[in-house]
Length: 228
Length: 299
Image (cartoon, rainbow over all chains, first blue to last red; front, side, top):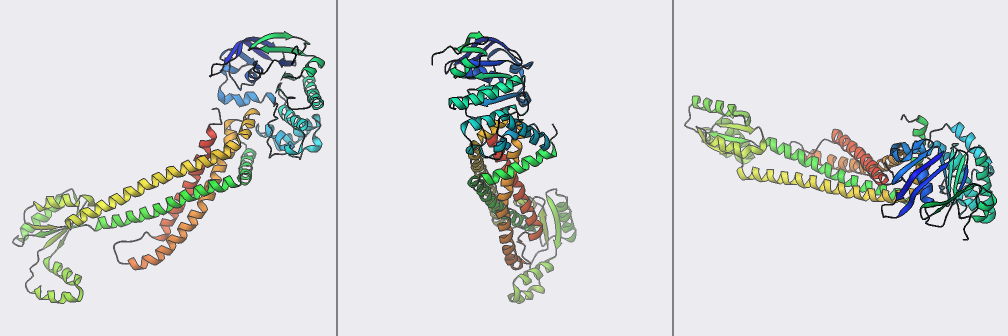
């Protein structure tokens, strides 16, 4: 569960990215965050996994007040949140298997558990047969599936995606969104910032529209609502 | 948090892999460590030997106190007591005028035979050979002794000794300053080299942070990598300095035999050098990699 109370974020250079936001996202929800570039979507996302701290107000994720979270506790906090990016952020020198296993090695899981669990998620994203390939040998969509596999491999309660389909063609984008739907059906909260109008309007979920740092619209089974 | 053995194994594997993967950067870093240690090692060897020479010269510096030839036995005893009671003086050895003459004759070798004629009527004075507790204070002590009763003359090679001490001290100081400058230059070189490697690995660190790796976990492979770089960098300096010092020692030691200037013994000294270079290499390597990773970690 994610709660934001009167949250504002001003960057050191004076840019007000988020201005007094109040929002509550329940466990197991699927939420689209929409808005034009520079509206504050990315900051909104970053506040959830504590890449940024709020300047004022409270951000509570899984019962943790992230503003009060000490830097040394951030790693433990992150282990319960999966993050997916537009540019995949895979390590080019590691195989698909190693890239996904990375997230478990970091939390010092046993090799046996790592192997089973990695194979399980690779099966979920339908990449088991490419486990030994390098990211450079995969298509963009496949790389994004590896990155999703990595984000869910330690069974986080929340998965956050910042424009996960931004670099992908429409057909591949649908594959990716369907995987997020699968993940969400298992009870994981999914928060996805996106520009993809077709997806938002077809797979109907809650839509939070951000403009100028504030929430201008928040509706269940909403529409994309922009003409861009 | 106690680290599991498996995790240490993982860090070790990762660090070794990364040494290979970084290729040219590894070679550059190892080169920087090698150059530093080589210079450090050579200077250390020179400095320690200079120090050894300085110490033996210092220990050899003595004051010859010539006793007034008119002084009686009792007066001589009084003077000896006075000398021995001075806290600045470490040792007082009596040398009779006959003994003095013998030494003089010997020092002239064959030509000294002529001097033996003086044995009948020795014109020399009885003397006390005095060593100062602090050899560098020799001239001060000599001046003090000069004022005592029954002292005919004080002899310590006056200005020569002072000059020698000046040269030794300047040499030591220059050596120490040079080593410090070189060390700083090397650390700068290494941290820059490693910074470039790490900039290339920012993504890796970013992802580690993203998936919940603790800073300690992120640091370990880099720590070990720095260690390997330092160890690799110490191989050439250690072998080269050991080899060259052995050669120099074998050549010089027999020539210096019996001389009060000595080159440091090969065996205990070379171990000291090897340990210094190993420890130095590891510290430089680890320091360099820790410095450069620090800014990518939000602590």
